[in-house]
Figure 1 (cartoon, one colour):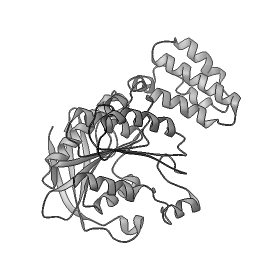
Figure 2 (tube, helix red, strand yellow):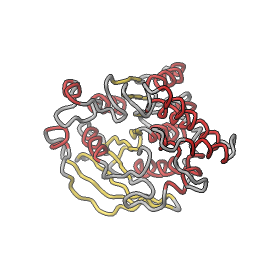
Figure 3 (cartoon, helix red, strand yellow):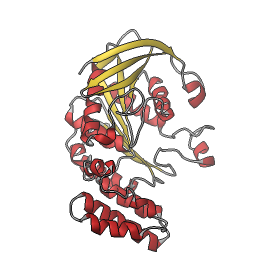
Figure 4 (tube, one colour):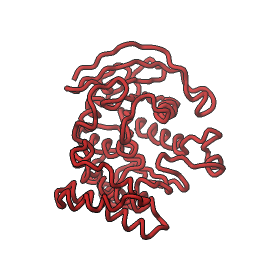
Length: 334
C-alpha cells in the first residue's frame, strides 16, 4: 500500500450551515491510497491541533458513493466538534477512485476499507492508537468485518446494520414495501426468494425467469430486475448474499455503538437489534450501546415537526449526531 499526500488546504466549516454555528478551525489534505489494482481518492479532515488527534474512518453504504456526499460532511463536522479527525474516501469506481465495485467481489470493499484504515493510522495528524470506524447500512457490515480483521480499533459505530444476511434483508425489503397489500407482499417475497435461490445455485434460471416474467405489470415488477443472467448484478450479489456481521460482532471486544431508526424500510431494525444484543451480551464490553431511535428512517432522519422537537433542527439533520459523536469521544478518552 502506498499513500500519496497531494495537497493541504483550509476547509470552511460545513457546520456553519448544517448544524448551526461555526465549529473548530479545520484543515484538510487529499490522499491517494493504493490498494492494487485500484487507487482510492480520499480526504482527511482534522481540527487544528499541535498534537496527533483521535480519528474515525467513514465507510460507505451500497451503490456508488464518495467524499462529496453531504451526509459525510455532516459527520465530519460533528466529529470535529469533539476533536476527532475524519477520513472519507471515494468508493472504487466513484469520484477520483479507480476500478469498479460492480466488477469485484464484496470482499474487495473490505480490502479497500483496510487500506484506508492503515493509511489513516499512519498519518502524522493522527494518533494511531485512537482510531475508530463508522459504517452506515452496507458499510456497517464492512465496518464490523474490518474491525475483526484488523485489531485495535478504538471504537466501532454501526448505523442501520442488517443483522440478518444481506439476502434476508432483501427479502425483508420486499415484504416491507407492500405492507398492507397481502397479495402483492406474498408475491414479491416469493419472487425475491426465487432470486436468492438462483443466486445460491438452488434454482435453474428457467425457474426463476418464469416467475420474473409473470410479475410484468405487477406492483413489485422492479424486483424482477435484472432480466438477463449475464448481468453484473448476479455475479456481484452472489458474493454478498450470505454475508453477515454477526460472527464478527460476537467475538470483537471493541466498544460498539449500534443504532437504527424504528421506521427503517430497508433494514429490519427490531430484529437486527435483538440479534446484535444477543451476539454482544456474552462479551460484556464496557461502552457498548445498542439503540433504536423512534420515528427515524434508515438515515436516522426524523421528518417534520417530530424531527424538530427531537433536536434535528430546521434543516432536519440526523438526530443521532450529537449523541453518537459524544459517545465516540468518550471511547477515545478512555
